[in-house]
Image 1 (cartoon, rainbow, N blue to C red):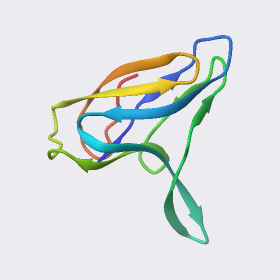
Image 2: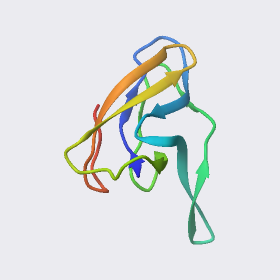
Image 3: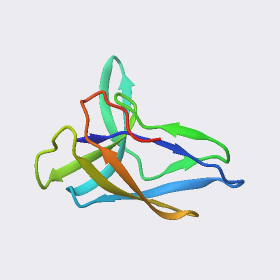
Length: 107
């Protein structure tokens, strides 16, 4: 499964998303889709830098959180609790609704 949402840095200094965790999966990793010679592949991203006052949207076919080793099938209408860990802001818990493949997450 994949997780999509919008991150907004309202602070005066840059921050960095460094870790993602959820009890719904054994592992959650930040991935981005990269196209090379007409072939699209996913690439692991260690961290996501967010400039002051910047908004970053994780969405299908772009940057997203990939859930690996799901502990149970995801069902539309349910919610996942995801913990985002930032270098400066610390841990932020986000309630993410399970939707269709192209569904957008909370903002």
